[in-house]
Length: 114
Length: 115
Image (cartoon, rainbow over the protein chains, first blue to last red):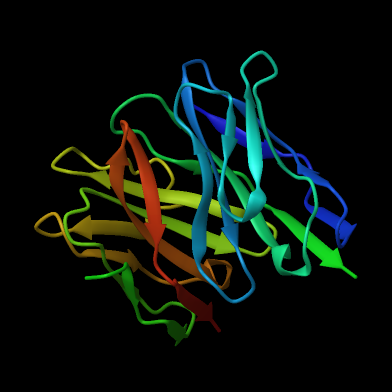
């Protein structure tokens, strides 16, 4: 079965600094990869996804992630964060196969301060 | 409907009681998921329904938990003989398939507090 490890539970950064949220997965087969975001007191929403093709994927709000098959990673990056990026970020994986569940990591809390 | 609807939004119950949580997915979405979100545990997968296939129940934590999906639409998650450790936010999501992958739309959740 696939699994997801988010290496940092909390990431504090200052406004306008770059940020990287790390995600590693394990799976014996090809996968689809996702990042979801949960802003304070809001529901989860899709930030970006990797299904196939280019390994660099761009999402909403200036975020991007790179799929690295050899390192089984899908790290999320943003070159300059804003206060409004403060949220919890979840990495998720499913097998590249019909009828499989989406498994989430435990989340990373990004706190942006001025 | 326009989004995934969950009810109740908040439920407080006494230990040992049974509870039912309802999820009304987006019309036309064939897949439906239940997750549990508790502090420090992220999103814990519970159960997954895909069309008419047998559900993936591999995430249900004990036999006190069950779920059904009637007519391929509304789903009910039932927790019997609730325990304090069942306190959490229960999230439902439904999905459409994008290039073979399920992209989830989440409901606002049902917050369960077991006293």
